[in-house]
Length: 59
Image (cartoon, rainbow, N blue to C red; front, side, top):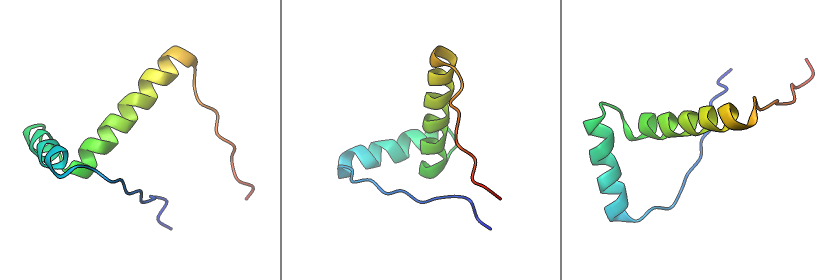
């Protein structure tokens, strides 16, 4: 079962083009770059605030 989820955002065309440029420069796809930023944000938050505890679904 695929646990990955999909999100979408609205973004200005010029910002998107620049974002794609930065992503390519970093050797990532745009999706990979977004995931990198999200994970970096979570790491920084948890470093300052402690680990985020998520409720686990019942089996």
